[in-house]
Image 1 (cartoon, rainbow over the protein chains, first blue to last red):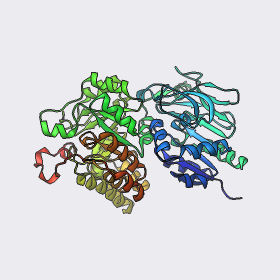
Image 2 (tube, rainbow over the protein chains, first blue to last red; image 1 turned 45 degrees about the vertical axis):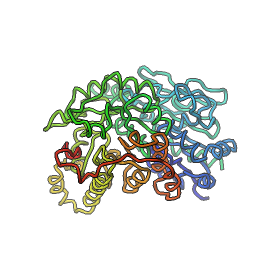
Image 3 (spheres, chains in turn purple, blue; image 1 turned 180 degrees about the vertical axis):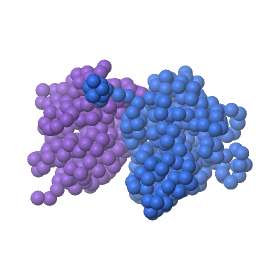
Image 4 (tube, each protein chain N blue to C red; image 1 turned 120 degrees about the horizontal axis):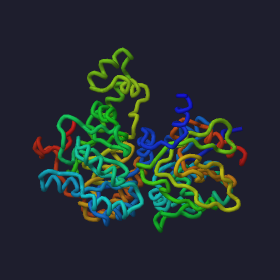
Length: 201
Length: 305
Protein backbone atom coordinates (compact mmCIF):
# COMPACT_ATOMS: atom_id res chain seq x y z
CA UNK A 1 0.00 0.00 0.00
CA UNK A 2 1.35 3.45 -0.88
CA UNK A 3 2.16 5.91 1.88
CA UNK A 4 -0.67 8.36 2.52
CA UNK A 5 -0.17 11.68 0.72
CA UNK A 6 -0.38 14.40 3.35
CA UNK A 7 -0.34 18.06 2.33
CA UNK A 8 0.89 20.88 4.53
CA UNK A 9 -0.85 24.20 3.89
CA UNK A 10 2.20 26.27 2.93
CA UNK A 11 0.89 29.83 2.82
CA UNK A 12 2.65 30.96 6.00
CA UNK A 13 3.94 29.47 9.25
CA UNK A 14 6.10 26.60 10.50
CA UNK A 15 5.60 24.44 7.41
CA UNK A 16 9.09 22.90 7.45
CA UNK A 17 8.70 21.49 10.97
CA UNK A 18 5.41 19.79 10.08
CA UNK A 19 6.91 18.41 6.87
CA UNK A 20 9.80 16.88 8.84
CA UNK A 21 7.47 15.39 11.47
CA UNK A 22 5.15 13.88 8.85
CA UNK A 23 8.05 12.42 6.83
CA UNK A 24 9.29 10.78 10.04
CA UNK A 25 5.77 9.41 10.56
CA UNK A 26 5.91 7.71 7.15
CA UNK A 27 3.75 10.04 5.06
CA UNK A 28 4.34 11.18 1.49
CA UNK A 29 4.43 14.91 2.26
CA UNK A 30 3.72 17.79 -0.12
CA UNK A 31 3.34 21.52 0.36
CA UNK A 32 -0.08 22.83 -0.67
CA UNK A 33 -0.53 26.39 -1.97
CA UNK A 34 -2.87 25.80 -4.91
CA UNK A 35 -6.21 24.07 -5.43
CA UNK A 36 -4.61 21.55 -7.82
CA UNK A 37 -2.09 20.58 -5.13
CA UNK A 38 -4.93 20.05 -2.67
CA UNK A 39 -6.62 17.66 -5.10
CA UNK A 40 -3.53 15.43 -5.02
CA UNK A 41 -3.43 14.79 -1.25
CA UNK A 42 -5.35 12.44 1.04
CA UNK A 43 -5.14 14.72 4.07
CA UNK A 44 -4.05 18.20 5.12
CA UNK A 45 -2.09 19.75 7.98
CA UNK A 46 -2.63 23.42 8.82
CA UNK A 47 0.57 24.60 10.50
CA UNK A 48 1.26 27.03 13.28
CA UNK A 49 1.52 30.61 12.10
CA UNK A 50 -0.53 33.77 12.23
CA UNK A 51 -4.20 32.80 11.83
CA UNK A 52 -5.21 36.28 10.61
CA UNK A 53 -2.66 36.05 7.80
CA UNK A 54 -3.42 32.44 6.89
CA UNK A 55 -7.16 33.22 6.79
CA UNK A 56 -6.55 36.13 4.40
CA UNK A 57 -4.21 34.16 2.14
CA UNK A 58 -6.69 31.29 1.95
CA UNK A 59 -9.22 33.73 0.47
CA UNK A 60 -6.77 35.55 -1.78
CA UNK A 61 -5.44 32.36 -3.32
CA UNK A 62 -8.94 30.84 -3.61
CA UNK A 63 -8.40 27.84 -1.37
CA UNK A 64 -11.33 28.32 1.00
CA UNK A 65 -14.03 26.66 -1.06
CA UNK A 66 -11.88 23.69 -2.17
CA UNK A 67 -10.74 23.02 1.40
CA UNK A 68 -14.29 23.35 2.78
CA UNK A 69 -15.48 20.88 0.14
CA UNK A 70 -12.76 18.37 1.00
CA UNK A 71 -13.53 18.66 4.73
CA UNK A 72 -17.21 18.09 4.01
CA UNK A 73 -16.14 15.05 1.98
CA UNK A 74 -14.32 13.56 4.98
CA UNK A 75 -10.68 14.58 4.32
CA UNK A 76 -8.62 14.24 7.55
CA UNK A 77 -7.16 17.55 8.72
CA UNK A 78 -4.82 18.29 11.61
CA UNK A 79 -4.27 21.87 12.80
CA UNK A 80 -1.77 23.09 15.41
CA UNK A 81 -2.23 26.48 17.08
CA UNK A 82 -3.21 28.79 14.17
CA UNK A 83 -4.35 25.57 12.47
CA UNK A 84 -6.67 24.87 15.41
CA UNK A 85 -8.17 28.35 15.01
CA UNK A 86 -8.65 27.72 11.29
CA UNK A 87 -10.57 24.53 12.12
CA UNK A 88 -12.89 26.13 14.69
CA UNK A 89 -16.55 26.81 13.97
CA UNK A 90 -16.42 29.84 16.30
CA UNK A 91 -13.47 32.11 17.21
CA UNK A 92 -13.39 34.58 20.13
CA UNK A 93 -11.00 37.57 20.25
CA UNK A 94 -10.24 37.30 16.53
CA UNK A 95 -10.87 39.96 13.93
CA UNK A 96 -14.55 40.19 12.98
CA UNK A 97 -13.71 39.20 9.40
CA UNK A 98 -11.54 36.24 10.40
CA UNK A 99 -12.98 32.98 9.11
CA UNK A 100 -11.94 29.39 9.54
CA UNK A 101 -13.07 26.29 7.75
CA UNK A 102 -15.88 25.59 10.22
CA UNK A 103 -14.60 22.08 10.64
CA UNK A 104 -14.83 21.28 14.34
CA UNK A 105 -17.89 22.14 16.41
CA UNK A 106 -15.99 24.17 19.00
CA UNK A 107 -15.43 27.69 20.25
CA UNK A 108 -11.77 28.72 20.37
CA UNK A 109 -10.33 31.78 22.09
CA UNK A 110 -7.34 33.36 20.33
CA UNK A 111 -4.22 34.23 22.36
CA UNK A 112 -6.14 32.86 25.34
CA UNK A 113 -3.09 32.32 27.54
CA UNK A 114 -1.83 35.89 26.95
CA UNK A 115 0.82 37.58 24.86
CA UNK A 116 4.25 36.21 23.92
CA UNK A 117 5.73 36.84 27.41
CA UNK A 118 3.10 34.34 28.65
CA UNK A 119 4.03 31.64 26.11
CA UNK A 120 5.00 28.48 27.99
CA UNK A 121 5.96 24.82 28.01
CA UNK A 122 4.03 22.25 30.07
CA UNK A 123 3.29 18.51 30.05
CA UNK A 124 0.02 17.45 28.42
CA UNK A 125 -1.32 13.89 28.28
CA UNK A 126 -3.20 13.00 25.08
CA UNK A 127 -5.77 10.21 25.27
CA UNK A 128 -5.19 7.67 22.54
CA UNK A 129 -1.42 8.32 22.48
CA UNK A 130 0.54 5.90 24.65
CA UNK A 131 3.55 6.79 26.79
CA UNK A 132 4.62 9.89 28.68
CA UNK A 133 2.73 13.18 28.49
CA UNK A 134 3.71 15.45 25.59
CA UNK A 135 6.16 18.20 26.35
CA UNK A 136 3.77 20.78 24.95
CA UNK A 137 4.94 24.15 23.61
CA UNK A 138 2.30 26.91 23.69
CA UNK A 139 3.07 30.10 21.71
CA UNK A 140 0.48 32.88 21.90
CA UNK A 141 -1.77 29.85 21.88
CA UNK A 142 -5.55 29.51 21.72
CA UNK A 143 -7.61 27.28 24.01
CA UNK A 144 -10.92 25.57 23.40
CA UNK A 145 -13.64 27.23 25.38
CA UNK A 146 -16.62 25.02 24.45
CA UNK A 147 -17.10 21.86 22.41
CA UNK A 148 -20.19 20.42 20.74
CA UNK A 149 -21.55 16.94 21.51
CA UNK A 150 -19.63 15.23 18.71
CA UNK A 151 -16.23 16.49 19.79
CA UNK A 152 -13.86 14.35 21.82
CA UNK A 153 -11.54 16.17 24.25
CA UNK A 154 -8.11 14.56 23.96
CA UNK A 155 -6.05 16.68 26.32
CA UNK A 156 -6.10 19.48 28.88
CA UNK A 157 -3.53 21.58 30.74
CA UNK A 158 -3.13 20.08 34.21
CA UNK A 159 -0.92 22.62 36.01
CA UNK A 160 -0.67 26.34 36.67
CA UNK A 161 -3.12 29.19 36.06
CA UNK A 162 -4.68 27.57 32.99
CA UNK A 163 -5.33 24.24 34.77
CA UNK A 164 -8.18 22.35 33.11
CA UNK A 165 -8.19 24.24 29.81
CA UNK A 166 -8.87 22.10 26.74
CA UNK A 167 -5.90 22.06 24.34
CA UNK A 168 -6.46 18.99 22.13
CA UNK A 169 -9.64 17.79 20.43
CA UNK A 170 -10.87 15.44 17.73
CA UNK A 171 -14.09 15.29 15.77
CA UNK A 172 -14.15 12.40 13.34
CA UNK A 173 -11.17 12.85 10.99
CA UNK A 174 -10.43 16.38 12.24
CA UNK A 175 -7.72 16.83 14.88
CA UNK A 176 -6.52 20.03 16.56
CA UNK A 177 -4.01 21.02 19.24
CA UNK A 178 -3.27 24.40 20.84
CA UNK A 179 0.38 23.40 21.17
CA UNK A 180 3.13 22.62 18.68
CA UNK A 181 4.29 18.97 18.71
CA UNK A 182 6.21 19.78 15.50
CA UNK A 183 8.69 21.90 17.50
CA UNK A 184 9.84 19.23 19.94
CA UNK A 185 10.95 16.22 17.91
CA UNK A 186 8.18 14.10 19.54
CA UNK A 187 6.57 12.50 16.47
CA UNK A 188 3.77 10.60 18.26
CA UNK A 189 0.99 13.02 17.40
CA UNK A 190 1.94 13.15 13.72
CA UNK A 191 2.10 9.33 13.75
CA UNK A 192 -1.38 9.30 15.33
CA UNK A 193 -2.61 11.56 12.53
CA UNK A 194 -0.97 9.51 9.76
CA UNK A 195 -2.59 6.38 11.24
CA UNK A 196 -5.91 8.21 11.21
CA UNK A 197 -5.35 9.04 7.52
CA UNK A 198 -4.55 5.38 6.76
CA UNK A 199 -7.74 4.26 8.56
CA UNK A 200 -9.84 6.80 6.66
CA UNK A 201 -8.63 5.79 3.20
CA UNK B 1 14.87 14.89 47.59
CA UNK B 2 16.51 16.82 44.74
CA UNK B 3 15.10 14.39 42.21
CA UNK B 4 11.51 15.13 43.22
CA UNK B 5 12.20 18.85 43.09
CA UNK B 6 13.49 18.51 39.55
CA UNK B 7 10.39 16.54 38.56
CA UNK B 8 8.15 19.23 40.02
CA UNK B 9 9.98 21.93 38.13
CA UNK B 10 9.60 19.95 34.92
CA UNK B 11 5.84 19.57 35.48
CA UNK B 12 5.01 23.23 36.15
CA UNK B 13 4.40 25.50 33.16
CA UNK B 14 7.56 27.49 32.29
CA UNK B 15 7.69 30.77 30.38
CA UNK B 16 10.54 32.54 28.59
CA UNK B 17 12.39 29.40 27.46
CA UNK B 18 14.62 29.44 24.38
CA UNK B 19 12.10 27.13 22.76
CA UNK B 20 9.10 29.44 23.12
CA UNK B 21 11.21 32.44 22.11
CA UNK B 22 12.63 30.80 19.00
CA UNK B 23 9.32 29.04 18.36
CA UNK B 24 7.53 32.38 18.18
CA UNK B 25 9.78 33.35 15.24
CA UNK B 26 9.11 29.97 13.57
CA UNK B 27 5.42 30.93 13.51
CA UNK B 28 6.23 34.14 11.61
CA UNK B 29 8.00 32.30 8.76
CA UNK B 30 6.84 33.03 5.25
CA UNK B 31 5.37 36.28 6.49
CA UNK B 32 5.91 40.02 6.28
CA UNK B 33 6.53 42.26 9.31
CA UNK B 34 5.75 45.91 8.65
CA UNK B 35 6.99 49.12 10.30
CA UNK B 36 4.09 51.28 11.51
CA UNK B 37 4.03 54.59 13.35
CA UNK B 38 0.28 54.87 14.14
CA UNK B 39 -2.60 52.58 15.10
CA UNK B 40 -4.19 53.40 11.74
CA UNK B 41 -1.12 52.15 9.86
CA UNK B 42 -1.09 49.03 12.07
CA UNK B 43 -4.66 48.27 11.00
CA UNK B 44 -3.74 48.75 7.32
CA UNK B 45 -0.82 46.34 7.80
CA UNK B 46 -3.01 43.75 9.51
CA UNK B 47 -5.65 44.10 6.77
CA UNK B 48 -2.96 43.50 4.16
CA UNK B 49 -1.96 40.21 5.82
CA UNK B 50 1.13 41.22 7.83
CA UNK B 51 2.18 38.53 10.36
CA UNK B 52 3.31 41.23 12.81
CA UNK B 53 3.90 44.96 13.03
CA UNK B 54 6.94 46.86 14.27
CA UNK B 55 5.84 49.88 16.30
CA UNK B 56 8.19 52.84 16.06
CA UNK B 57 8.05 56.60 16.22
CA UNK B 58 9.62 57.37 12.87
CA UNK B 59 10.27 55.01 9.97
CA UNK B 60 13.97 54.72 9.06
CA UNK B 61 13.58 57.03 6.03
CA UNK B 62 12.44 59.83 8.36
CA UNK B 63 15.09 59.06 10.97
CA UNK B 64 17.61 59.40 8.18
CA UNK B 65 16.09 62.65 6.87
CA UNK B 66 15.57 64.32 10.26
CA UNK B 67 18.70 63.15 12.05
CA UNK B 68 19.19 63.54 15.80
CA UNK B 69 19.19 60.81 18.44
CA UNK B 70 16.62 58.15 17.77
CA UNK B 71 15.15 56.24 20.74
CA UNK B 72 12.51 53.77 21.86
CA UNK B 73 8.95 54.90 21.06
CA UNK B 74 6.53 56.48 23.54
CA UNK B 75 4.74 53.72 25.54
CA UNK B 76 1.39 55.40 24.80
CA UNK B 77 1.98 54.99 21.10
CA UNK B 78 3.04 51.33 21.52
CA UNK B 79 -0.01 50.65 23.71
CA UNK B 80 -2.26 52.20 21.10
CA UNK B 81 -0.89 49.85 18.47
CA UNK B 82 -1.16 46.80 20.77
CA UNK B 83 -4.84 47.69 21.31
CA UNK B 84 -5.46 48.25 17.59
CA UNK B 85 -4.43 44.85 16.18
CA UNK B 86 -4.69 41.15 16.99
CA UNK B 87 -1.37 40.20 15.35
CA UNK B 88 1.94 40.30 17.30
CA UNK B 89 3.48 43.70 17.99
CA UNK B 90 7.25 44.23 17.99
CA UNK B 91 9.10 47.35 19.08
CA UNK B 92 12.67 48.64 18.85
CA UNK B 93 15.17 49.27 21.63
CA UNK B 94 18.55 50.93 21.12
CA UNK B 95 21.59 48.64 20.90
CA UNK B 96 22.75 47.98 24.46
CA UNK B 97 19.84 49.88 26.07
CA UNK B 98 18.62 47.17 28.42
CA UNK B 99 16.27 49.52 30.27
CA UNK B 100 14.37 50.37 27.09
CA UNK B 101 14.06 46.61 26.64
CA UNK B 102 12.78 46.20 30.21
CA UNK B 103 10.13 48.83 29.51
CA UNK B 104 9.09 47.17 26.26
CA UNK B 105 8.77 43.83 28.05
CA UNK B 106 6.63 45.46 30.71
CA UNK B 107 4.35 46.90 27.99
CA UNK B 108 3.74 43.37 26.72
CA UNK B 109 5.32 43.67 23.27
CA UNK B 110 5.75 40.27 21.64
CA UNK B 111 9.30 40.78 20.31
CA UNK B 112 12.01 43.39 20.92
CA UNK B 113 14.21 44.46 18.00
CA UNK B 114 17.60 45.54 19.34
CA UNK B 115 18.07 47.78 16.36
CA UNK B 116 20.84 49.66 14.60
CA UNK B 117 18.13 51.93 13.15
CA UNK B 118 18.01 53.67 16.54
CA UNK B 119 21.07 55.44 17.94
CA UNK B 120 23.20 52.92 19.90
CA UNK B 121 23.22 53.39 23.69
CA UNK B 122 26.35 51.28 24.25
CA UNK B 123 29.23 51.06 21.78
CA UNK B 124 30.79 48.01 23.47
CA UNK B 125 27.99 45.72 24.65
CA UNK B 126 24.69 44.51 23.30
CA UNK B 127 21.82 43.64 25.66
CA UNK B 128 22.06 40.37 27.63
CA UNK B 129 18.96 38.95 26.02
CA UNK B 130 18.93 35.75 28.12
CA UNK B 131 17.86 37.91 31.08
CA UNK B 132 14.46 38.60 29.47
CA UNK B 133 11.20 36.70 29.06
CA UNK B 134 10.39 38.61 25.87
CA UNK B 135 12.30 37.32 22.80
CA UNK B 136 14.71 39.49 20.77
CA UNK B 137 15.47 39.88 17.09
CA UNK B 138 18.83 41.39 16.10
CA UNK B 139 20.39 42.51 12.85
CA UNK B 140 23.46 40.95 11.26
CA UNK B 141 25.60 41.68 8.22
CA UNK B 142 27.51 38.39 8.34
CA UNK B 143 27.55 35.01 10.06
CA UNK B 144 29.92 35.97 12.88
CA UNK B 145 27.70 38.87 13.85
CA UNK B 146 24.60 36.63 13.74
CA UNK B 147 26.30 34.05 15.97
CA UNK B 148 27.43 36.65 18.50
CA UNK B 149 23.85 37.91 18.76
CA UNK B 150 22.54 34.34 19.18
CA UNK B 151 25.15 33.78 21.90
CA UNK B 152 23.78 36.85 23.69
CA UNK B 153 20.30 35.32 23.51
CA UNK B 154 18.76 36.60 20.24
CA UNK B 155 15.91 34.26 19.23
CA UNK B 156 15.66 35.55 15.66
CA UNK B 157 18.11 37.16 13.22
CA UNK B 158 17.48 39.54 10.34
CA UNK B 159 19.87 40.83 7.75
CA UNK B 160 20.51 44.52 8.36
CA UNK B 161 20.43 45.86 4.85
CA UNK B 162 20.53 49.63 4.77
CA UNK B 163 17.30 50.78 6.39
CA UNK B 164 15.33 53.74 5.08
CA UNK B 165 16.86 53.75 1.60
CA UNK B 166 14.60 51.62 -0.58
CA UNK B 167 17.91 50.25 -1.94
CA UNK B 168 17.93 46.49 -1.55
CA UNK B 169 21.60 45.99 -2.44
CA UNK B 170 22.91 45.80 1.11
CA UNK B 171 20.24 43.31 2.17
CA UNK B 172 21.30 41.21 -0.82
CA UNK B 173 24.94 41.40 0.24
CA UNK B 174 24.14 40.42 3.83
CA UNK B 175 21.88 37.51 2.90
CA UNK B 176 24.41 36.17 0.41
CA UNK B 177 27.25 36.63 2.89
CA UNK B 178 25.49 34.78 5.73
CA UNK B 179 24.50 31.89 3.46
CA UNK B 180 27.99 31.72 1.88
CA UNK B 181 29.65 31.54 5.27
CA UNK B 182 27.28 28.77 6.37
CA UNK B 183 28.11 26.78 3.21
CA UNK B 184 31.80 27.31 3.85
CA UNK B 185 31.49 25.90 7.38
CA UNK B 186 29.71 22.85 5.98
CA UNK B 187 32.66 22.19 3.69
CA UNK B 188 35.32 22.35 6.41
CA UNK B 189 36.87 19.28 8.05
CA UNK B 190 36.25 19.11 11.81
CA UNK B 191 39.78 20.14 12.77
CA UNK B 192 39.44 23.41 10.84
CA UNK B 193 36.25 24.41 12.65
CA UNK B 194 38.26 25.54 15.69
CA UNK B 195 40.01 28.22 13.67
CA UNK B 196 36.77 29.05 11.86
CA UNK B 197 35.15 29.72 15.26
CA UNK B 198 38.05 31.98 16.18
CA UNK B 199 37.76 33.88 12.91
CA UNK B 200 33.99 34.25 13.30
CA UNK B 201 34.51 35.36 16.93
CA UNK B 202 31.77 32.92 17.86
CA UNK B 203 31.56 29.94 20.24
CA UNK B 204 32.94 26.68 18.83
CA UNK B 205 29.82 24.68 19.83
CA UNK B 206 27.56 26.97 17.82
CA UNK B 207 29.93 26.92 14.82
CA UNK B 208 30.03 23.11 14.93
CA UNK B 209 26.23 22.93 15.11
CA UNK B 210 25.89 25.13 12.01
CA UNK B 211 28.48 23.10 10.13
CA UNK B 212 26.32 20.03 10.84
CA UNK B 213 22.84 21.44 10.20
CA UNK B 214 23.60 23.97 7.44
CA UNK B 215 21.35 26.57 9.02
CA UNK B 216 21.19 29.02 11.88
CA UNK B 217 19.57 27.62 15.06
CA UNK B 218 17.08 30.50 14.86
CA UNK B 219 14.88 31.90 12.11
CA UNK B 220 16.57 34.21 9.57
CA UNK B 221 14.54 37.09 8.12
CA UNK B 222 15.70 39.86 5.82
CA UNK B 223 15.40 43.61 6.33
CA UNK B 224 16.68 46.92 5.04
CA UNK B 225 15.71 48.58 1.77
CA UNK B 226 12.92 46.23 0.65
CA UNK B 227 10.45 48.35 -1.35
CA UNK B 228 8.75 46.13 -3.95
CA UNK B 229 7.16 42.67 -4.22
CA UNK B 230 10.11 41.65 -6.40
CA UNK B 231 12.57 42.76 -3.68
CA UNK B 232 10.75 40.59 -1.12
CA UNK B 233 10.63 37.60 -3.45
CA UNK B 234 14.34 37.90 -4.31
CA UNK B 235 15.25 37.87 -0.62
CA UNK B 236 13.12 34.77 -0.11
CA UNK B 237 14.81 33.06 -3.06
CA UNK B 238 18.16 33.98 -1.52
CA UNK B 239 17.16 32.02 1.59
CA UNK B 240 15.36 34.48 3.86
CA UNK B 241 12.56 32.85 5.85
CA UNK B 242 10.49 36.04 5.94
CA UNK B 243 10.66 39.78 5.35
CA UNK B 244 10.71 43.00 7.34
CA UNK B 245 9.51 46.03 5.38
CA UNK B 246 10.27 49.37 6.96
CA UNK B 247 9.81 52.60 5.07
CA UNK B 248 8.94 50.80 1.83
CA UNK B 249 5.21 50.58 2.51
CA UNK B 250 4.11 53.77 4.21
CA UNK B 251 6.50 55.94 2.18
CA UNK B 252 4.94 54.70 -1.05
CA UNK B 253 2.02 56.03 -3.10
CA UNK B 254 -0.53 53.36 -2.15
CA UNK B 255 0.46 51.67 1.13
CA UNK B 256 -2.52 49.28 1.47
CA UNK B 257 -2.12 47.88 -2.02
CA UNK B 258 1.68 47.69 -1.83
CA UNK B 259 1.52 45.97 1.56
CA UNK B 260 -0.90 43.33 0.26
CA UNK B 261 1.25 42.80 -2.85
CA UNK B 262 4.41 42.25 -0.80
CA UNK B 263 2.56 39.70 1.39
CA UNK B 264 1.45 37.75 -1.69
CA UNK B 265 4.91 37.97 -3.26
CA UNK B 266 6.48 36.55 -0.11
CA UNK B 267 4.19 33.50 -0.10
CA UNK B 268 4.58 32.85 -3.85
CA UNK B 269 8.20 34.04 -4.04
CA UNK B 270 9.10 31.22 -6.42
CA UNK B 271 6.25 31.75 -8.90
CA UNK B 272 7.03 34.49 -11.46
CA UNK B 273 3.43 34.44 -12.81
CA UNK B 274 2.03 35.38 -9.41
CA UNK B 275 4.84 37.92 -8.94
CA UNK B 276 4.03 39.57 -12.27
CA UNK B 277 0.38 39.77 -11.34
CA UNK B 278 0.91 41.32 -7.90
CA UNK B 279 3.51 43.79 -9.18
CA UNK B 280 1.02 45.56 -11.47
CA UNK B 281 -0.47 48.99 -10.80
CA UNK B 282 1.06 49.63 -7.40
CA UNK B 283 1.75 53.32 -8.03
CA UNK B 284 4.88 55.08 -6.82
CA UNK B 285 7.42 53.10 -4.83
CA UNK B 286 9.29 55.02 -2.15
CA UNK B 287 11.70 57.43 -3.77
CA UNK B 288 14.82 55.88 -2.31
CA UNK B 289 18.46 56.75 -1.80
CA UNK B 290 21.37 54.83 -3.29
CA UNK B 291 23.43 53.35 -0.48
CA UNK B 292 26.62 54.36 -2.34
CA UNK B 293 25.62 58.01 -2.04
CA UNK B 294 25.28 57.87 1.75
CA UNK B 295 28.46 59.03 3.49
CA UNK B 296 30.05 56.23 5.53
CA UNK B 297 29.24 57.66 9.01
CA UNK B 298 25.53 57.76 8.16
CA UNK B 299 25.23 54.10 7.23
CA UNK B 300 23.06 52.33 9.79
CA UNK B 301 24.23 48.81 8.90
CA UNK B 302 27.65 49.63 10.28
CA UNK B 303 26.24 50.13 13.76
CA UNK B 304 26.63 47.01 15.92
CA UNK B 305 29.50 44.57 15.65
